[in-house]
Amino acid sequence: GLKQNQVAIQQTLGLGLSHDKMATSFSERFGVIERFVIDSAGKHEETDRTLKSLKDGHDGLRNAHASIPDRIDFIEKLLGDSAEKHARELKALKDAHDKHVKNLEEVKMAAAHHASLPERIDYLEQVLGQSADKNWKELQMLKGAHAKHDAAHSQYSKELDALRAAHEKHATVSERLDNVEKMLGDSADK
Image 1 (cartoon, rainbow, N blue to C red):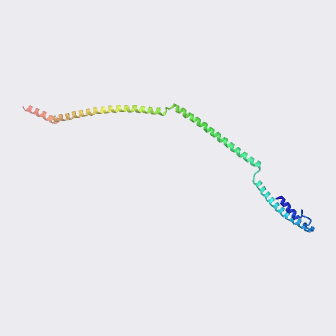
Image 2: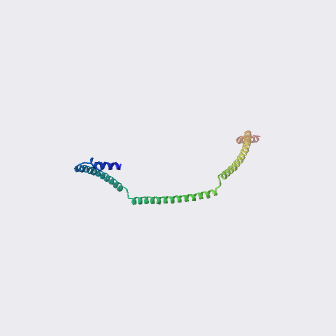
Image 3: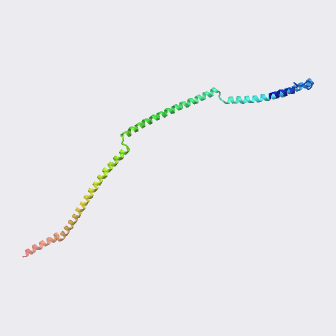
């Protein structure tokens, strides 16, 4: 790379050549140098434009971005805000946890005063069993009372039927009165 450029420059300027091969006139040699300088100046201007374009792009990027201190301040503020927010949320979470622990203790205390589910079921079975036994006894007593009532009703019905039959054999009051008058009238006629 570099060595080749150096050889090309020497050849263009006629340096390093033997005396015979060197340009003979000063004006030819000066023309070669002049062309080299013009070409070099053109390339230099092109490189300057490229460098300026790159510098402008870099300056534009630098202006588009915040400075490092500004960026650090922003990050510190963001982390500070985030840390404060997290501290508030952590405190709220701890408060809620403490409240739940207190509520759990209250539930445990309340549960300690209540019978367990098996104890409650045993109690219900006992009460229902006693109630069923009592209802069975009462039902049997009612059946017995009903049977006595039916027997008594049957007896009363029979007695009523006998009274009706006996009543049919008796004369009515008007028949009896007529009968008494007739006897008295027969007796008075005698």
